[in-house]
Length: 134
Image (cartoon, rainbow, N blue to C red; front, side):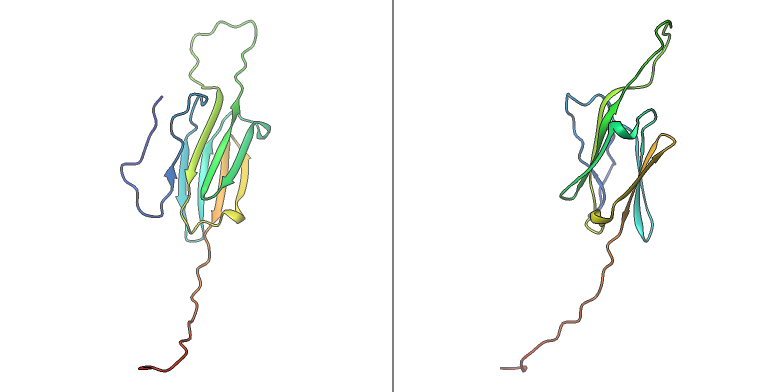
């Protein structure tokens, strides 16, 4: 199994936490984009139904897991099968400015789209009490 890792990581960036586990049969492709307002994760899951899919948040990690069932007609001769089936999982550490409480997901056309809005940062004015030099 080939696990692709980025050549470098910047502080606060997404991090692939999947790792190798023998019960995982394959890793779906994952694309991550960002705008000023949100992070967008696109997981390629052709042939996976929403009933066979789970998206979970634990702490600062987001996990996409499930199963793709591969079925072939009974009376066929197989010449080549490149599609992978079985259990899959991707676990991603998310940056601190992603608001995991506002996660939105959609599935369609073989893709799971996950949208994570950015937290709105706000400045807080701090008033100092007391007198200088005392």
